[in-house]
Amino acid sequence: MVRTSTHIAESQLMNKEKLDHFRSLLRAQLRQHARLVSEEQAAAIDAGDDGAKESADLALHDLAEELTLKLGERDSRMVADIDQALLRLDEGSYGICARCGEEIDERRLEALPTARYDAACQSAIEQEKGTVAHPTL
Ligand SMILES: [Zn+2]
Image 1 (cartoon, rainbow, N blue to C red):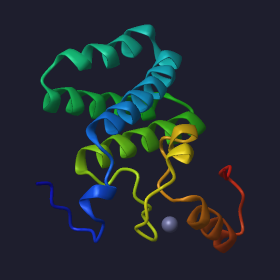
Image 2: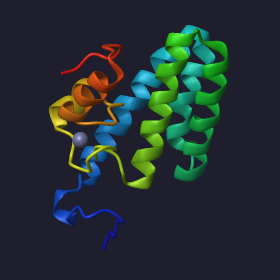
Image 3: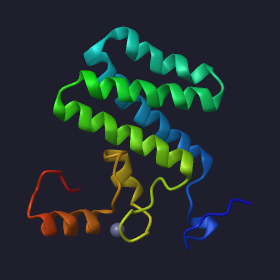
Image 4: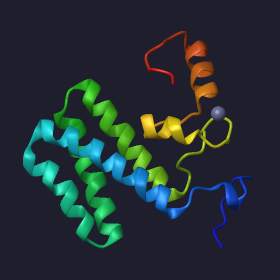
């Protein structure tokens, strides 16, 4: 039994296959950014798959932090988003809107695996900020 601190019923939570799917999407994105720094670091992301889960995730986190130092502002922000999304995957809060607690549409996550909000909240937040910095789906 998986218990979470949210009000969301177990049946609504993503199953392991889906979580693994999004994890590999996020890893692929991270790998692309790593390649901007070096092929070696891009390879390190794949190497992490073979290790024990915990140490692999820690290694990924370290790598993401290193990348944010080396990449330009735009790329480093995206790497930080990917890192946060991977952390949410581990916490079990992935795919849940951080604003309203509803599930984020899977098609939205497919297009934007780092999404923290569902489409409605994302546009509400952008309106509050008066900015269109992030594309809405
Ligand atoms: Zn929401």
